[in-house]
Structures are given as C-alpha cells and as structure tokens.
Length: 229
Image (cartoon, rainbow, N blue to C red; front, top):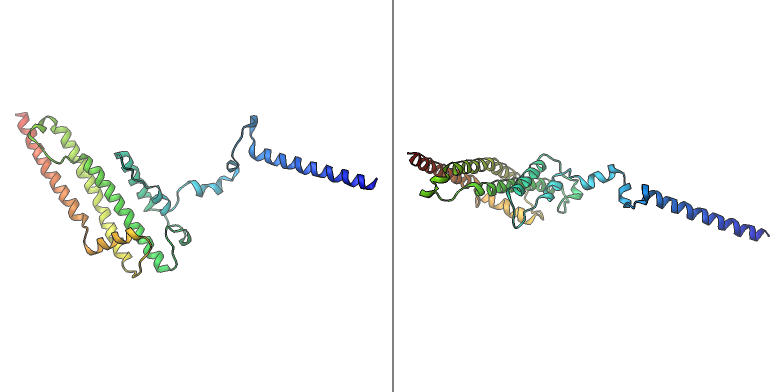
C-alpha cells in the first residue's frame, strides 16, 4: 500500500511540474488572444538597447553603405551617419574592427578610423557636387541659365563643405603615422600612406573644381546678359 502511495505522489508531482512548465511557456510565448510572440520580445529593453541602437564609432561606420546605383539622399544619409561617428566613443579594444593587442595599436587604430571616416565624408560631398557641376557651358544653355546658375552654386557649396574634412584626414594621418607598426586595416593603411606621401592632394583637387565652377558661373552670367539683350 505504501509503495502505491509513493508512486501516486510521484506522478502527481510530475504532473505539477509539467503544468508549471506549460504555464511558464505560456507566459513567455503568449499574449492576449493567444497571439504568438517571439521569446526575444521579453528580453528587457535595457539589454537589447546596445544590440539595436548604434552608440560607438564602429557602429555608425558599419551603417555606411554605397550601392552600385545611389542617389543624393543616400549620399546625404551616409554623410550624416559618418558625422555622428566622429562625435562618438570607440568600442572597447576587444570589440574593435581588427585585432588589438597593445595601446599603440589602439591609438593608431583610432586615428586611422577617424582619418578614413573624414575621407568618406569628403568623397560623398564630392559625389553630390558632381551631380550639380555642369561640365561644359554651351551657347544654347542661355535658355536654362538661371537653373544652371543655381546648380553651379550648389556644386560650389558642396566642394567647400568637403575641404575641411581633407584637413582633418591629413591631421589624423599624421597622428597615425607616429606609430611605426602596421595594423590589419589594410586598405586604410594604404590610404594613410598615400596621404602622407602626397600621392593624393584633395586640397588642390577641390580648389581646382571651385576655380572651374567660378569660371563656368561667369560664362553663364555672360550668356544670361546677352540673352536678356
């Protein structure tokens, strides 16, 4: 009799455990009206926050994207994200984009990233500028002179917006070059070397663009004046 009682007690305990388990599952996977929801919905928002919201330089850098076919809106989004990146802190060295083992590597890594981000902002401004910079002015452009004037004005402004980021990129390239080690940021290291050696000079490139824009603006003004006569 005692044996039967023990067996019955064990069975009742197992049923209770299973019922509790089902209740636990119900609490986590069911809402009102038996709506199924993912378990991740019940992860505290504080824990999920750093998974879904960018906080660090690398987070915003990883949001950068250049499609094969892009429009001005895509370029401006990239610029804004990268500008925010320049105001953020870096991730812990253990979570950097490349392996970091020493303080010198981390110092160079940070300067290289800031250099590269400034170069990306510069290049995106130039891409916007070229969309407004009419390459040639013809005699028949007098019919569209006012529109061309406005377009060239925007192009000039975009060129001017890009220039400060070249100076910043050079500054960070110089700082990164004080550390005589090579990081695993391969193509960014190549970019640094080209800047340091003077193989690229965006100050000259941008100023040349601005000079040509001004000449084209003068040509359009002359066309407009003759057209109005």
